[in-house]
Length: 162
Image (cartoon, rainbow, N blue to C red):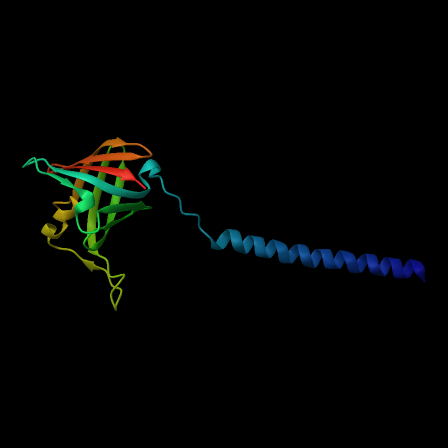
């Protein structure tokens, strides 16, 4: 009787282990297959940057970026660039070596009733942010973990990282 009870309990424990192991394997497999890890290859570019100075290369005018509206901030993440100043703008960007391409500007609708982003078709709306074309190319003059300097055909922008 004791041997039979012992064998019965041993089989029951093995069965419980098999069920637990199957369930755990299923959950682990589900977690690994359902999530995609998105990484960014932007290096030191990622993060929040404050525009400290804007130099108009055509006129020589120097503007303190901290005095414009509530201050000018650029935030890089993934392939999105958000600019905050008088308004909030969203761009796509491409970072390759010493070049930064900023394109596809939208006026953020985050604080509106519909929350729809509207495309910007007039580049003059972007001038206050240091952007003069709907598709702007910058040369990266300096990029460290604390400072960045960008230059286009029209403007040189200096940033500090938050």
